[in-house]
Image (cartoon, rainbow, N blue to C red):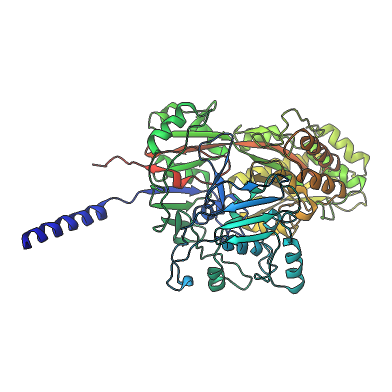
Length: 593
């Protein structure tokens, strides 16, 4: 009997040692810019979104392989049940989803409920927090705007106050009552600022304005392990993550690549990768060396580096021979130029101010920018809605075409005279100088030099203000950036997400040009209540033309996204909307001898 017990113990011990000996699968990833706040209510950039999307969960997400993209449940048990009039969404939550353990929960397991989503959505309107993401739900939910107005008047949010539009039927069931039919709400609820945050965590760790910037606690596949700000982030697999297995079908246009991914991943438990190690590397060369040396597993190939890996849209043979994988898409992203409409030099609607902005737009060579800054890794874009997004019109043509001669004539006509030194003055005779803001790494410096050429063509002095990315964002929210090249990545794949960039009520949020026009706002609000289709598309064309006529902003291009993956990475396909795909991947490294 004792011998049998000994044998059982040895077998059990061997099993433990075997499990302990199993190597931890680690993915090495690079961010080209520093992360910001890890509070999802405060996030508004692509880089930070990588992290918050891994830690926190929204009700809905997107099918990993489906193209065009298709909404899918995440913590919700199914897609929402929408009433016939489009004014009510019934959402059922999966039971048995748990927040990662944290002292804020008093040693108890903390289950996710619909109340956590209601609390998190109210939090976007807390005047102390001043979230840049309140626009996502403004005007949509019955009673929510009134709660926000009362909070603004008192200076604090009453989180226990009822909102008629949030009908909590039980712990796992929520009915949303909308102010009008809304055809984008499901996609909006899939955007990470609307992820669930636990009230106990906010109460324990929030700073004086209610932000939990450095203690993220969510229900996602990963949790924060280590964090050296602006340098290194380590995410560890959430040991309490629910039982979920990889189960996706190949996309109709995915062909052999999708079939290969399905063979690699079907049926595997999510996540397979136990640790994500993220380094922040600002310079192109250091990122390239990290990937080519094997120190990074997945690499975002920005335009300046494209010729080293891509030739005529295909992976170079020497990289393909190493098993390097290329996943290449047209990003649902808008790159555009804006001029601050509240700025005393550039802003305003008088004829001479409109003439100044239109002249600048016509003097800038967008094709040269694509060629020199992006190495051709972009497509010209004439309207704010990019390809692959509902509302894009491939036949739209802008009235703002490259014509420096006409641009100079326009300035001459409206009183911007050149002095003996060749530089122009304002119509009142004061010096004319423009401050262009750019990021302080190599691509930002090159972009600024191209814009200096543009202003020199017009006889306008230009000063380049270089700042780190997070500081630029803060200045934009305060309407303190005079002009800049800006990129907006789709939060959800609909034109509404791009046309809202110029909506007056979104000043201090996403409307960085601080533009407000009654006609534009009226058209936007009308389009906001329409389903995708010809009627809404016609309004988008009118809104775009108004932006051109007033010289408010100029759409420039949409870029290609080329992602390189090492041979060991399994299951990778770049998703157009998800910031990262880590939980859907696996790594099988060859033994090194």
